[in-house]
Length: 267
Image 1 (cartoon, rainbow, N blue to C red):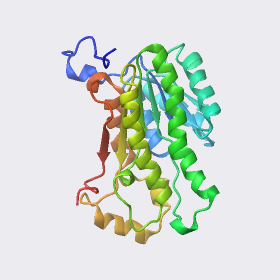
Image 2 (spheres, rainbow, N blue to C red; image 1 turned 120 degrees about the vertical axis):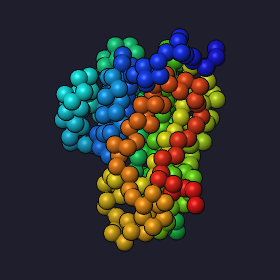
Image 3 (cartoon, helix red, strand yellow; image 1 turned 90 degrees about the vertical axis):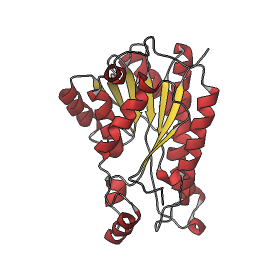
Image 4 (cartoon, rainbow, N blue to C red; image 1 turned 60 degrees about the vertical axis):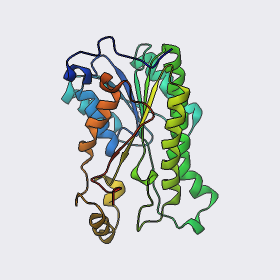
């Protein structure tokens, strides 16, 4: 069957961005960029399942967003690096939270470690890739099974500018390589799943989260000199991109990678 097309492509443009009635799941949704993704999707009208691994505040965070937005937001625990764990979680969300439906899944969970390439061990290399690459694949597989059964779905991956260039001065080959891998994975899935799902990526630049603020001040100053926009992005500035990709406003868009980086990858 052809790529999904909304029943009325001439509907008023702002109505096309509405997520009212949609069921959405977001991995890594309890902190950092993930919280703002969840908030943005909820603000657009979606009921959102927050998938978390170890956050102690996940249920409280979900409850607060639900209170602020007036939609259902609930937290579900899963390990994205475990195929069985995320499969079980997605099935539970579809059955119990979505009452048999799942419209959008955002694979946002990620980790990063600064390690010189000559010093990686099997364990430290695997620790990055288990979440950043394997975790995206297992999340995609779990979501894709639901989407194929429904005949329609939408998968969004949080990648990074690190998929496009080599960040300096930090040494993070595993992180960079994993993000490049998921961008290409998205392209592969977009073609393979074109009959029943769209697949796209968002590649943020430097975002004001713990992953950035925990770095030395000197490193932050060096990054600022390399960003034409001369500032670090607030995570809330990303939420509209995810609403766009999750909505019917871009139904002909699949296999794309949206770079949002203040011009960092341009020079």
